[in-house]
Length: 248
Image (tube, rainbow, N blue to C red; front, side, top):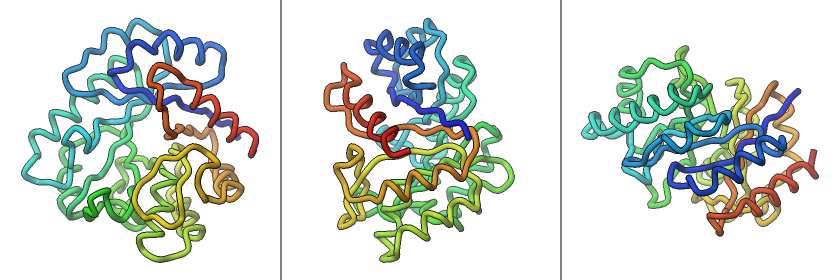
């Protein structure tokens, strides 16, 4: 099994590109997971020969594919991310399925036809206790169908189980029937069902269990979704990557 570790960037982080480029050249990280923010330009990212994956713009900037009243706006954001992916030769695009009704998400997904898209699982409730779509293996199976892939966010899976009041370990394992090979990872507390992105070891998750889960895939992509307080430094990312390596 081969694992690739991803460094998370947003398109507002152009100033960090020289550091990111060096970390890729040194094989510390193997790819950049980049989120295009509306009204930002791609030029700086095209100037570096880096392996990119794309995380499609999220709820933070208004995307919610489960809201049928935002169809045109959602399509505009997603098409922008698809354009970035085309220009950067991205192998994958990660997409949040939104909050609301799963039927509306499925209806929206019928408008998209790109096999690079990976649907990401979500907590069962949002930060404002919204009804999230795609929190269970059954819902993810329905969303991806035969057209899309799957990004397993291990933190979201734990949070979904906590929200449902069930043991998180068998719940997480159930997602592996969907054959994920792309992952998000961070820590969190077991007393809180709301989304957190803590540094590895700063929460209560059983990382021996979570690391063992990663051995189920082949050629896995694993993006760190841990905190970065200083946006001009990757010291925290390097710390968390070191913590992960110490657990393998």
